[in-house]
Image (cartoon, rainbow, N blue to C red; front, side, top):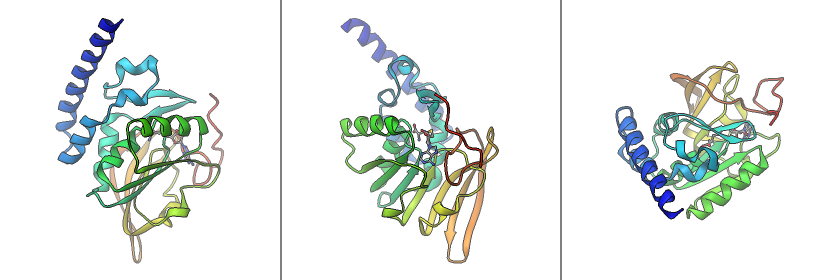
Amino acid sequence: MAGMARIASHRLEQAKAALLAELRLEVRDRRLLEAMSRVPRERFVPPEVQPYAYDNRPLPIGYGQTISQPLIVAVMTEALGLRGSEKVLEIGTGSGYQAAIVAELAAEVVTVERVAPLAERASLVLADLGYRNVHVHAVGDELGWPEEAPYDAILVTAGAPGVPRELVDQLAGGGRMVVPVGGRDLQDLLRVTRRATGISVERLGPCRFVPLVGRGAWPDGAEPSS
Ligand code: SAH
């Protein structure tokens, strides 16, 4: 068994190196690439998909939810332009992987999740890996975590029909929000910057996320069934 585990972990290391080589073609931020090589993605996925932890694709994490594709995690994080001193809010903790990446690059991360068991699992993994600057909250219908606003950066890891107004309100002046906006099946990744006079919006490219649920979501946004 120990031998098998060794082979498996050797394979994971090889897959990780290949993934990082792929990411280096797309991502310029050195600190971000280093963070992605430090964080063990296999710890954030269920055992049955662990062998695929370093495939450049989303993976199922239960409850009808997914851990995002590594490349999209990189693109979203890079778009926030983190330097180390920021307080960051994430909507949609899911596995906790994206929160860990941000925790490596910013001062503090507040992350909220509607599916309580996912929030609990993510919280345990993050604590076990020693992240003390991530705070996971299970939430209900409210959007974000106004208690600790304003945030220098906000990351929305679920698709929305429009730029959620309640989240713009939780952004500091000059703060950036990265959010997938569009249809249920395909969205545009937007970077929204809060200005004194309102917001400015840049389009970063097409993406596909599971839908946001609750306020700021599609009106018929039912809970996923599993
Ligand atoms: N960032 C995650 C990927 C999350 S998938 C990771 O790194 O693994 C999107 C998550 O958003 C799902 O877990 C879903 O339950 C959650 N979600 C959807 N709507 C939400 C809302 N209004 N508030 C908080 N979480 C929400």
